[in-house]
Image (cartoon, rainbow, N blue to C red; front, top):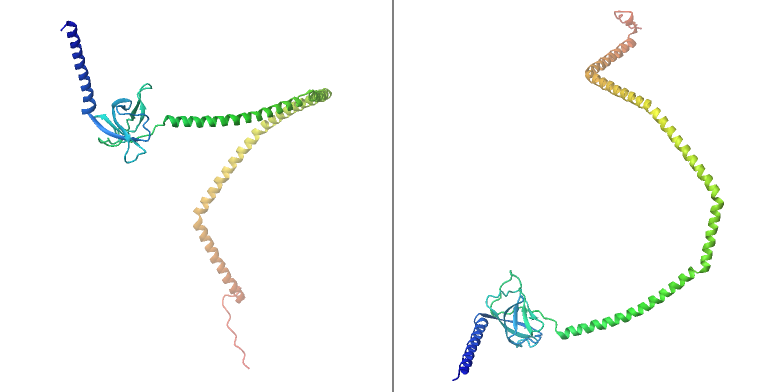
Length: 308
């Protein structure tokens, strides 16, 4: 065997060992340490077995099968193997995605919530439908149709607005034409003539108003002086009146105290007057019955009644 043949055989053997090592490592990574899950979509979007599974945008596994679901043929069952330890939870959502614009479709899974319960191996991942290209094209067609209708309507409204604007300009031209300008000029001339004729009267009226204002100022000054002159005597009189009122109040308080102090004496005096009045009444009655008691001390003997 030549030297070239030996070198070629050695290179082929090294390449075979390197390829076997890479295949073995990939198989160990995606087979021995993976966990199976499944999800369901109505539109797979060209997803095929072997497509990437992204968790939060990072590669986490592979799609193992894409097939119609036997329980509901309207949905597509997607089986995946995810690297063990990937924190899939009940809030995670699976949907179609892309690794990049140049690559094929991939299955994207959101990170969900840290507080949500972790999904058990083999369980179903909640899914969310992505809009297909046909749906996007249909919506764009609807938008285009609506835009054409709006453009047609806007053109009609713009035509009406243009006509109204032309009518407005014509009316403005009519209003601001030469006849109107002549009338306005005539009115201004009349106003100027009236002002020129009445200017002397206005001047005299202004002079009279100035004189009246000066007279009013003088009057106000006189009134202020008079009020100032009268204010001090009035203030003194008010002060004296206040002192008099205070003295009268003090006198009334003293009289009230004195009356309260002699209240029992007044009651005795009233009682004595009542007794004296009663005595006078008795004396009067006695004098009416025996008036001779004023000049005699003893009562005369009663006379015998004459007998027949």
